[in-house]
Length: 246
Length: 127
Image (cartoon, rainbow over all chains, first blue to last red; front, side, top):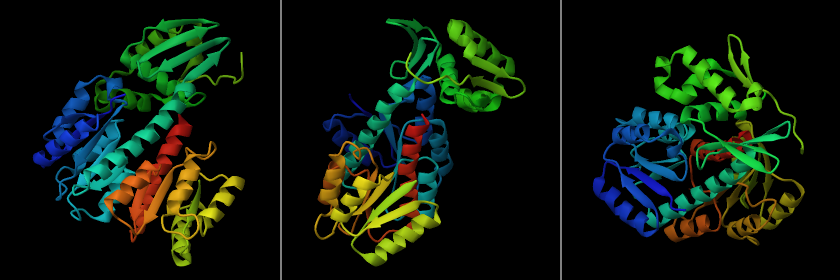
């Protein structure tokens, strides 16, 4: 599998040099001239496409000019992020804040590219471990039927006995269902659901729109649709399933 | 969350233990690779912080044993070292380290890096 590396460094020459080195190491590289162009790119690609296998290296400006933008990227994107800066240009407390806000690593721009590649490979190893765990976690059984959510191909299927039937879910429907299933047995507040799926656009989304999406998902899941419960005044809940072999 | 700290320097071990406990982590310590390895057979931990330079079994040897063990191979490991050469770091990552910190380091940086690793464990278990 070819991993993608998305680079946004203010030093374009360095970005090109790194990109060349990464390409030789079999990564697919893309350079963004500014973090805001990277944000545009993130919002232009479809929702599951920013999942694996990619990650980004973003440069933090020494005076912190783009700090809020980087924090925004950390919030909206599930792509792992490595933050880079000029050596000793930013304080330990800022490095700490950025790591705690969701960045996966911090490096200085003087890093030896070989060390950087070794670091990236270590991240990938870790990502693949969690990915392998995920594939089994997204199977949910109810009364002899199993819902399988496949994030690599952005699809869902219902398996009954030996037969597997794909369900056609739109991007948003798949996201909503995933969140509900992740939180199986727990109420997912309406607002949290809106924010997770529509992100910054969530304020424009009418509450009834969400109800319609839920109605549509229930219909597509057929008998399993009954597992999605409406919790009046709060949100929705995917009913806790009994575990065990069927 | 339980963290194992392995370092032959007692002062350092005590300091890291205190910093981690202050943050609410449960900490066990060992003073060399052999002792750490024996401890790991009895009690599993969620994460390990290993010093590279130790008499007997050093950090790299211990790391390779951990990565070769079915029960332990997925445990996040952070390496600590006074050696900062690129080749050493590349070697560390290639031997299975998740992160690498050069001594001396600021306590808040150590904590932040541990939290990054802890976040990944939680993410896995939460999914």
